Image 1 (cartoon, protein in one colour):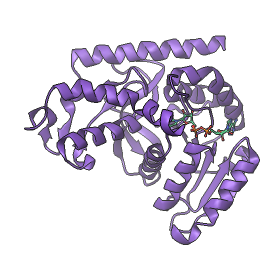
Image 2 (cartoon, protein in one colour; image 1 turned 135 degrees about the vertical axis):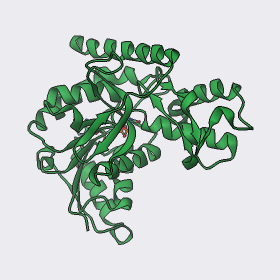
Image 3 (spheres, protein in one colour; image 1 turned 120 degrees about the horizontal axis):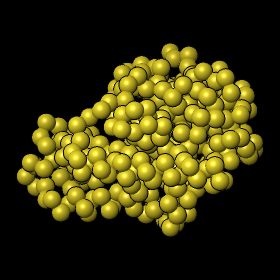
Image 4 (cartoon, helix red, strand yellow; image 1 turned 90 degrees about the vertical axis):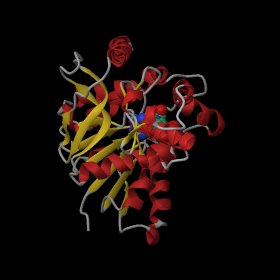
Length: 307
Ligand SMILES: NC(=O)c1ccc[n+]([C@@H]2O[C@H](COP(=O)([O-])OP(=O)(O)OC[C@H]3O[C@@H](n4cnc5c(N)ncnc54)[C@H](O)[C@@H]3O)[C@@H](O)[C@H]2O)c1
């Protein structure tokens, strides 16, 4: 049985979905939950504990952030989500204040810090900077959710289970993300060689992917279930030291000509965090798009000095 402990900061839509996904996977023995609204955290802990007949044994407590410093991993979902019509970068001015507040309380933390709050790449950069943690231990979920959505969309077109679709989205988790269409594989077959695939699907799905969060937010006010599953999967691979390759966000140093900006690239994940960020083969067009994404993120990072 696992002896791991995990903390979640922010118990709104996303935090509560992350919690239930973690519990179903039996990822930890202790789950500590925190929210600036203390009653919300206490209520969530009570509600989750009442389900304990149905998931592997886990003690769930409402806790202060300071109580989480011994946790193996802490997930941050604190921060406002988008309203219809807002981009993720629009959330920066409010959510950066929360980053400063939480980072002070995390000084000296030695575990793994998983950032979910948006704009996730810019916040990953600042959580690493403000906490002073090693870059390899501060990991944003980045484009993992976009990749999950993309696999589902391609799978639906082909009538193939999304688990057989292997695809990558790199760069910003946001409007400038880069879908590596030429690398998409259906098990061993390149997508572009698949019989029923049409090149026109690429623009159609790219637009659908960019609008995916907005389409959900306008209907139910937030997105939460898929990101809950994504985050629990990332934690599983980290805590089990699986050395899997996932496309996640981290502060990049000197790769593809990118330096001191956080964004998503395929990375080898171990119990120490990001063991290695991989430099994969991309075309000149994809390289240029990636650099456009870098420039957008750098501008957002610089804008924080004025907030
Ligand atoms: N990375 C992704 O793929 C992804 C996907 C979905 C949502 N998100 C982001 O996750 C974040 C949370 O979304 P949500 O829908 O759960 O929002 P929400 O408003 O339901 O929950 C946010 C919670 O954070 C709490 N909070 C605020 N400041 C805090 C602080 N200083 N300390 C502790 N708790 C604090 C609030 O009280 C609230 O309960 C948003 O930024 C959203 O954009 C990211």
